[in-house]
Image (cartoon, rainbow, N blue to C red; front, side, top):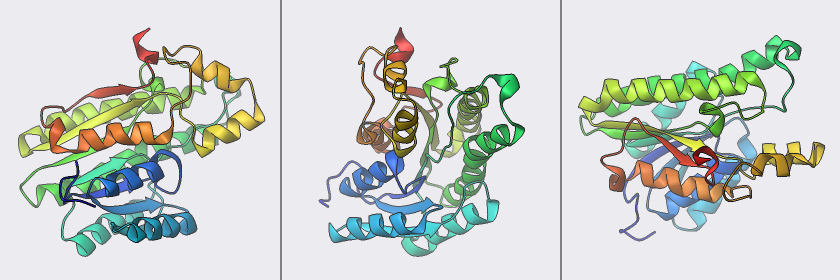
Length: 256
């Protein structure tokens, strides 16, 4: 962990970090010199990831918790501040979706869970993270994970499309509110990515992989690390004039 990494000396909280994009981000951020606070519901993979990061000379702490629970998020932010002295940045990546059913056939509890994880989760995180950054007076940076479903109907279940649109709305509103305090807030417009959730879906419906990639210019799934690298740049000082953005990392899907 050299002293010239993109994220040198930054303290970064990452949600949804037990697998997929969040786990890839933890490794990338640590390799770029950040100390990371890992939050997710599953303790074992979090502990294993933190151990792996420490074994490579990085700094990592674990906060087991659910982003839909305000107290869990508050505890995680507090853990970061207690462990590392402050919170500089956050990657609010936790999300949940399911294979599409028609709107009138979608159960209310599916709607509730999608909204809770993807929208309330981002809300809970920013509500706790922003005060930690304001208290220092030196600004900060937040990246929220949206999706191409945040821009248009991708064919996935309708509450997911609504939720990811909402993530962009929260991102833009928060960026406008806190820009004067030096806090930059952006969203990633993520294309179909080879995550644990996606692999499970493809196993259940093999033709899903072609359907998920046929619109994109680059006709393939993203690897989680490709999304993580974009988040790293947005959280770094290299992206100092980027805020309120919906930054596509989607293989060109939103361009065509």
